[in-house]
Image (cartoon, rainbow, N blue to C red; front, side):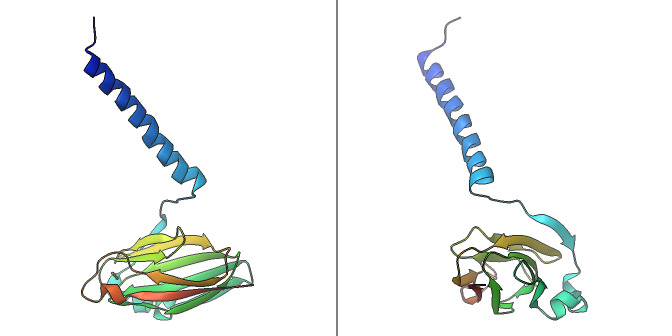
Length: 158
Ligand code: CUA
């Protein structure tokens, strides 16, 4: 059986593409540290005020210098708290929910990025090694005030 040379070329090209795609997935999973969402928890979006974490959004120090929990509400068109502060090198576990529509949560300049979907609590753990001021933005279109939806993350020296 003979194979047409164009067919042969396409077979080769397909094999290269498969290897390329697998390498890209491998790179982002093992080298760049991308994570899939963790621990999806459901919540009634009309009653988030009844949950202590979201009635009073805040940064909670669990282990000084090592572990911090951030309880955050993303709504049209703001985050609360608007400003957070955590020390460098600590594990920061974000718990975020939305009472209205889908929002995004992206810490600019890092790989911390998640969707915030009404009815769920988004849990994402991060560690910030570089002190400074980071901008948090919403990157899911959520209505006419979308572009103003932002917060500030301060990573302190320790
Ligand atoms: Cu919230 Cu866009």
